[in-house]
Amino acid sequence: MRLGGPVFESWGDPDGWTAALGRLGYSAAYCPIDASAGDDVIRAYAAAAEKAGVVIAEVGAWSNPLSPDGETRRAALAQCQKQLALADRIGARCCVNISGSRGSKWDGPHPDDLTEETFDLIVEATRSIIDAVKPTRAFYTLETMPWMYPDSPDSYLRLISAIDRSQFGVHLDPVNLVCSPKRYFNNAALLRECFSKLGPHIRSCHAKDIVLADRFMVHLDEVRPGLGALDYRTYLQALGSLHPDTPLMIEHLQTAEEYALAADYIRATAREIGAQFIAPPGDNP
Image (cartoon, rainbow, N blue to C red; front, side):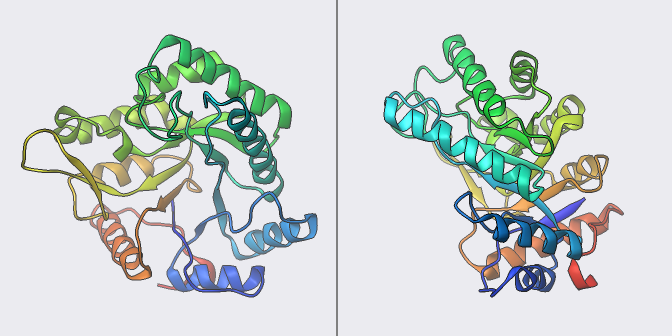
Protein backbone atom coordinates (compact mmCIF):
# COMPACT_ATOMS: atom_id res chain seq x y z
CA MET A 1 0.00 0.00 0.00
CA ARG A 2 1.01 3.62 -0.53
CA LEU A 3 0.58 6.76 1.55
CA GLY A 4 0.01 10.20 0.09
CA GLY A 5 -1.29 13.69 0.70
CA PRO A 6 -1.08 17.27 -0.52
CA VAL A 7 2.24 19.04 -1.15
CA PHE A 8 2.37 22.48 0.45
CA GLU A 9 5.77 23.60 -0.84
CA SER A 10 6.22 25.06 -4.31
CA TRP A 11 7.99 23.13 -7.02
CA GLY A 12 9.40 24.32 -10.32
CA ASP A 13 8.94 21.29 -12.52
CA PRO A 14 7.74 17.67 -12.41
CA ASP A 15 11.02 16.44 -10.93
CA GLY A 16 10.71 19.08 -8.22
CA TRP A 17 7.23 17.76 -7.48
CA THR A 18 8.41 14.16 -7.02
CA ALA A 19 11.33 15.38 -4.89
CA ALA A 20 8.85 17.22 -2.65
CA LEU A 21 6.78 14.05 -2.32
CA GLY A 22 9.90 12.17 -1.29
CA ARG A 23 10.69 14.69 1.44
CA LEU A 24 7.19 14.13 2.82
CA GLY A 25 7.61 10.36 2.70
CA TYR A 26 4.79 9.93 0.16
CA SER A 27 4.80 7.35 -2.63
CA ALA A 28 1.26 8.30 -3.77
CA ALA A 29 0.06 11.71 -4.86
CA TYR A 30 -2.95 13.76 -5.77
CA CYS A 31 -2.80 14.78 -9.42
CA PRO A 32 -0.79 18.04 -9.49
CA ILE A 33 -2.49 19.50 -12.60
CA ASP A 34 -5.98 19.71 -14.08
CA ALA A 35 -7.47 19.13 -17.51
CA SER A 36 -6.48 22.61 -18.71
CA ALA A 37 -2.81 21.55 -18.83
CA GLY A 38 -1.24 21.04 -22.24
CA ASP A 39 -0.19 17.69 -23.64
CA ASP A 40 3.51 18.33 -23.00
CA VAL A 41 2.85 19.15 -19.34
CA ILE A 42 0.68 16.06 -18.85
CA ARG A 43 3.33 13.85 -20.43
CA ALA A 44 6.06 15.42 -18.32
CA TYR A 45 4.24 14.77 -15.03
CA ALA A 46 3.34 11.24 -16.07
CA ALA A 47 6.98 10.52 -16.94
CA ALA A 48 8.27 12.04 -13.70
CA ALA A 49 5.85 9.97 -11.62
CA GLU A 50 6.84 6.78 -13.42
CA LYS A 51 10.56 7.55 -13.09
CA ALA A 52 10.25 8.24 -9.36
CA GLY A 53 7.95 5.30 -8.64
CA VAL A 54 5.06 7.56 -7.59
CA VAL A 55 1.47 6.46 -8.10
CA ILE A 56 -0.95 9.26 -8.99
CA ALA A 57 -3.87 8.17 -6.85
CA GLU A 58 -6.72 10.32 -8.09
CA VAL A 59 -7.87 13.21 -10.21
CA GLY A 60 -10.70 15.19 -8.63
CA ALA A 61 -13.78 16.08 -10.66
CA TRP A 62 -15.67 17.78 -7.83
CA SER A 63 -18.98 18.97 -9.28
CA ASN A 64 -22.71 18.17 -9.30
CA PRO A 65 -23.82 16.01 -12.25
CA LEU A 66 -27.30 15.79 -10.71
CA SER A 67 -27.87 19.52 -10.22
CA PRO A 68 -31.46 20.66 -10.73
CA ASP A 69 -30.06 23.56 -12.73
CA GLY A 70 -29.54 22.44 -16.31
CA GLU A 71 -26.53 24.64 -17.03
CA THR A 72 -24.79 23.57 -13.83
CA ARG A 73 -25.52 19.92 -14.57
CA ARG A 74 -24.16 20.09 -18.12
CA ALA A 75 -21.03 21.88 -16.94
CA ALA A 76 -20.50 19.23 -14.26
CA LEU A 77 -20.80 16.38 -16.75
CA ALA A 78 -18.29 18.11 -19.04
CA GLN A 79 -15.93 18.63 -16.09
CA CYS A 80 -16.14 14.96 -15.15
CA GLN A 81 -15.42 13.89 -18.71
CA LYS A 82 -12.39 16.20 -18.98
CA GLN A 83 -10.96 15.13 -15.65
CA LEU A 84 -11.50 11.43 -16.40
CA ALA A 85 -9.68 11.91 -19.72
CA LEU A 86 -6.82 13.57 -17.82
CA ALA A 87 -6.70 10.68 -15.34
CA ASP A 88 -6.44 8.21 -18.20
CA ARG A 89 -3.70 10.18 -19.97
CA ILE A 90 -1.57 10.84 -16.90
CA GLY A 91 -1.89 7.29 -15.57
CA ALA A 92 -3.90 8.02 -12.42
CA ARG A 93 -5.67 5.15 -10.73
CA CYS A 94 -8.99 6.94 -10.81
CA CYS A 95 -11.01 10.07 -11.36
CA VAL A 96 -13.20 10.72 -8.33
CA ASN A 97 -16.36 12.71 -7.73
CA ILE A 98 -19.40 12.39 -5.51
CA SER A 99 -22.59 11.22 -7.19
CA GLY A 100 -24.18 14.65 -6.73
CA SER A 101 -27.24 16.15 -5.08
CA ARG A 102 -30.73 17.05 -6.29
CA GLY A 103 -30.51 20.18 -4.14
CA SER A 104 -28.78 23.52 -4.54
CA LYS A 105 -25.71 22.53 -2.50
CA TRP A 106 -23.56 20.23 -4.62
CA ASP A 107 -22.41 18.05 -1.70
CA GLY A 108 -25.28 18.63 0.72
CA PRO A 109 -28.26 16.49 1.70
CA HIS A 110 -31.60 16.68 -0.09
CA PRO A 111 -34.82 14.68 0.49
CA ASP A 112 -34.58 13.15 -2.99
CA ASP A 113 -30.95 12.05 -2.87
CA LEU A 114 -31.57 8.54 -1.52
CA THR A 115 -34.51 7.66 -3.76
CA GLU A 116 -34.70 5.10 -6.54
CA GLU A 117 -35.25 7.89 -9.06
CA THR A 118 -31.94 9.45 -8.05
CA PHE A 119 -30.22 6.07 -8.12
CA ASP A 120 -31.28 5.76 -11.77
CA LEU A 121 -30.05 9.29 -12.52
CA ILE A 122 -26.64 8.40 -11.05
CA VAL A 123 -26.45 5.33 -13.27
CA GLU A 124 -27.33 7.38 -16.34
CA ALA A 125 -24.87 10.18 -15.53
CA THR A 126 -22.00 7.82 -14.73
CA ARG A 127 -22.50 5.81 -17.89
CA SER A 128 -22.53 8.99 -19.96
CA ILE A 129 -19.22 10.13 -18.42
CA ILE A 130 -17.45 6.81 -18.97
CA ASP A 131 -18.92 6.23 -22.44
CA ALA A 132 -17.88 9.70 -23.63
CA VAL A 133 -14.26 9.21 -22.56
CA LYS A 134 -13.79 5.47 -23.06
CA PRO A 135 -10.84 5.27 -20.63
CA THR A 136 -8.51 2.30 -20.89
CA ARG A 137 -6.45 2.80 -17.71
CA ALA A 138 -8.18 5.09 -15.24
CA PHE A 139 -11.45 4.29 -13.50
CA TYR A 140 -14.30 6.68 -12.80
CA THR A 141 -15.28 6.41 -9.13
CA LEU A 142 -17.85 7.81 -6.72
CA GLU A 143 -16.73 8.67 -3.21
CA THR A 144 -18.76 7.05 -0.46
CA MET A 145 -20.97 9.60 1.30
CA PRO A 146 -23.24 9.83 4.39
CA TRP A 147 -26.37 11.17 2.67
CA MET A 148 -26.17 10.27 -0.99
CA TYR A 149 -25.41 7.12 -2.95
CA PRO A 150 -23.18 5.21 -2.49
CA ASP A 151 -23.91 5.35 1.25
CA SER A 152 -23.04 1.72 2.10
CA PRO A 153 -21.11 -1.24 0.68
CA ASP A 154 -24.36 -2.75 -0.60
CA SER A 155 -25.51 0.41 -2.39
CA TYR A 156 -22.08 0.60 -4.02
CA LEU A 157 -22.43 -2.98 -5.20
CA ARG A 158 -25.84 -2.08 -6.64
CA LEU A 159 -24.28 0.81 -8.54
CA ILE A 160 -21.46 -1.35 -9.89
CA SER A 161 -24.00 -3.84 -11.20
CA ALA A 162 -26.40 -1.23 -12.61
CA ILE A 163 -23.74 0.98 -14.24
CA ASP A 164 -22.17 -2.12 -15.79
CA ARG A 165 -19.00 -0.49 -17.09
CA SER A 166 -15.57 -2.11 -16.73
CA GLN A 167 -13.93 1.26 -15.95
CA PHE A 168 -16.22 2.08 -13.04
CA GLY A 169 -14.52 1.51 -9.69
CA VAL A 170 -14.70 2.26 -5.99
CA HIS A 171 -13.35 5.22 -4.05
CA LEU A 172 -13.54 4.38 -0.35
CA ASP A 173 -13.81 7.04 2.33
CA PRO A 174 -14.97 5.05 5.37
CA VAL A 175 -15.34 8.10 7.62
CA ASN A 176 -18.03 9.40 5.26
CA LEU A 177 -20.01 6.21 5.92
CA VAL A 178 -19.94 6.68 9.71
CA CYS A 179 -23.22 8.59 9.89
CA SER A 180 -24.83 7.07 13.00
CA PRO A 181 -23.83 5.94 16.51
CA LYS A 182 -24.31 2.33 15.43
CA ARG A 183 -21.77 2.67 12.63
CA TYR A 184 -19.49 4.77 14.85
CA PHE A 185 -19.22 2.20 17.61
CA ASN A 186 -19.03 -0.69 15.15
CA ASN A 187 -16.77 0.92 12.58
CA ALA A 188 -14.32 -2.02 12.59
CA ALA A 189 -17.13 -4.26 11.35
CA LEU A 190 -18.08 -1.63 8.78
CA LEU A 191 -14.49 -1.50 7.53
CA ARG A 192 -14.33 -5.29 7.21
CA GLU A 193 -17.63 -5.27 5.30
CA CYS A 194 -16.37 -2.57 2.92
CA PHE A 195 -13.22 -4.47 2.03
CA SER A 196 -14.95 -7.85 1.90
CA LYS A 197 -17.57 -6.64 -0.56
CA LEU A 198 -15.74 -3.91 -2.47
CA GLY A 199 -12.07 -4.86 -2.20
CA PRO A 200 -11.45 -5.93 -5.82
CA HIS A 201 -12.96 -2.68 -7.08
CA ILE A 202 -11.18 -0.21 -4.77
CA ARG A 203 -8.94 2.24 -6.60
CA SER A 204 -8.12 4.81 -3.91
CA CYS A 205 -8.95 5.51 -0.24
CA HIS A 206 -9.10 8.58 1.97
CA ALA A 207 -7.58 8.92 5.43
CA LYS A 208 -9.26 10.98 8.11
CA ASP A 209 -10.96 10.30 11.46
CA ILE A 210 -14.23 10.94 13.30
CA VAL A 211 -15.48 11.78 16.80
CA LEU A 212 -18.96 11.39 18.28
CA ALA A 213 -19.65 14.36 20.58
CA ASP A 214 -21.04 13.73 24.07
CA ARG A 215 -24.01 16.04 23.67
CA PHE A 216 -27.58 15.94 22.47
CA MET A 217 -28.45 15.20 19.64
CA VAL A 218 -26.06 13.20 17.43
CA HIS A 219 -23.02 15.24 16.39
CA LEU A 220 -20.23 13.61 14.39
CA ASP A 221 -17.14 15.65 13.60
CA GLU A 222 -14.25 14.95 11.25
CA VAL A 223 -10.82 15.11 12.90
CA ARG A 224 -7.19 14.33 12.14
CA PRO A 225 -6.24 10.65 11.90
CA GLY A 226 -5.39 9.44 15.40
CA LEU A 227 -7.72 11.84 17.20
CA GLY A 228 -10.94 9.92 16.60
CA ALA A 229 -12.48 6.48 16.84
CA LEU A 230 -11.85 5.03 13.37
CA ASP A 231 -10.16 1.65 13.83
CA TYR A 232 -6.99 2.29 11.85
CA ARG A 233 -5.55 -1.10 12.76
CA THR A 234 -8.46 -2.79 11.00
CA TYR A 235 -8.36 -0.24 8.18
CA LEU A 236 -4.67 -0.77 7.44
CA GLN A 237 -4.87 -4.55 7.80
CA ALA A 238 -7.64 -4.63 5.20
CA LEU A 239 -5.89 -2.14 2.94
CA GLY A 240 -2.74 -4.23 3.06
CA SER A 241 -4.63 -7.17 1.58
CA LEU A 242 -5.28 -5.29 -1.67
CA HIS A 243 -2.95 -4.58 -4.59
CA PRO A 244 0.26 -3.01 -3.21
CA ASP A 245 -0.26 0.15 -5.28
CA THR A 246 -3.56 0.94 -3.55
CA PRO A 247 -3.21 4.49 -2.17
CA LEU A 248 -4.32 5.91 1.17
CA MET A 249 -4.63 9.68 0.77
CA ILE A 250 -4.72 12.03 3.76
CA GLU A 251 -7.12 14.96 3.28
CA HIS A 252 -9.02 17.91 4.77
CA LEU A 253 -6.32 19.22 7.12
CA GLN A 254 -5.27 22.86 7.23
CA THR A 255 -1.49 22.89 7.63
CA ALA A 256 1.60 20.96 6.63
CA GLU A 257 2.23 20.29 10.33
CA GLU A 258 -1.17 18.62 10.72
CA TYR A 259 -0.50 16.43 7.70
CA ALA A 260 2.86 15.40 9.15
CA LEU A 261 1.21 14.41 12.44
CA ALA A 262 -1.45 12.42 10.57
CA ALA A 263 1.17 10.63 8.49
CA ASP A 264 3.22 9.83 11.61
CA TYR A 265 0.17 8.28 13.28
CA ILE A 266 -0.75 6.21 10.23
CA ARG A 267 2.81 4.94 9.76
CA ALA A 268 3.15 4.10 13.47
CA THR A 269 -0.12 2.14 13.39
CA ALA A 270 1.05 0.27 10.30
CA ARG A 271 4.27 -0.70 12.09
CA GLU A 272 2.27 -1.96 15.09
CA ILE A 273 0.43 -4.47 12.91
CA GLY A 274 3.48 -5.45 10.84
CA ALA A 275 2.33 -3.63 7.70
CA GLN A 276 4.35 -1.20 5.66
CA PHE A 277 3.95 1.40 2.96
CA ILE A 278 5.88 1.35 -0.30
CA ALA A 279 8.94 3.58 0.04
CA PRO A 280 8.73 7.13 -1.34
CA PRO A 281 11.00 8.64 -4.01
CA GLY A 282 14.57 8.70 -2.74
CA ASP A 283 13.69 6.13 -0.05
CA ASN A 284 13.32 8.84 2.58
CA PRO A 285 12.20 7.78 6.10
